[in-house]
Image 1 (cartoon, rainbow, N blue to C red):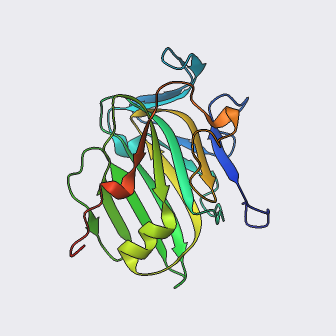
Image 2 (cartoon, helix red, strand yellow):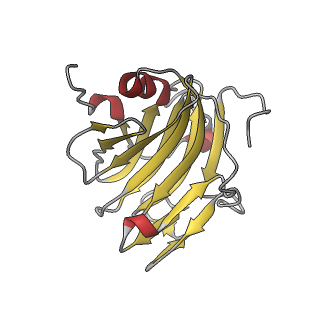
Length: 201
């Protein structure tokens, strides 16, 4: 999808203020909703994904199940609101062994588990809005002992509010971010690598 596009700096795949924020996403809703309410904390329209079963209410990108994102930028950042309910998201990557691997972060899981094709990990979120930073190159190396090549797919499940999901070539400080990438409120930055407890690490 983005494979033949020159990639540097920032590449946004979801922005809640766009005219069609889910243009490149597919939606699956069962006993829940995907809406665009106004969030009081940041005084802005956001994308809300809510469902009684997190497995059956989600958005996935790209929308075409046979397509892949082809994003080579190694950092994934989600600006997401904690709704104090179960929440999970998943990233599928390709490594230099040409193997598709998945990372799944959930706020209801206690320990990190690494299997050959999926790594599941706990996600700690503060109240309100969070900026979740995911170093895909580092995680691929630590979990699978291989090198990150590109991201194939991103899936975000209920329950959360989203402002933006983007990839970047490195981690940027708040001062370096373009204005439309900032939240303009005291935001807690959550670097997932702090929470990972690897066996033998």
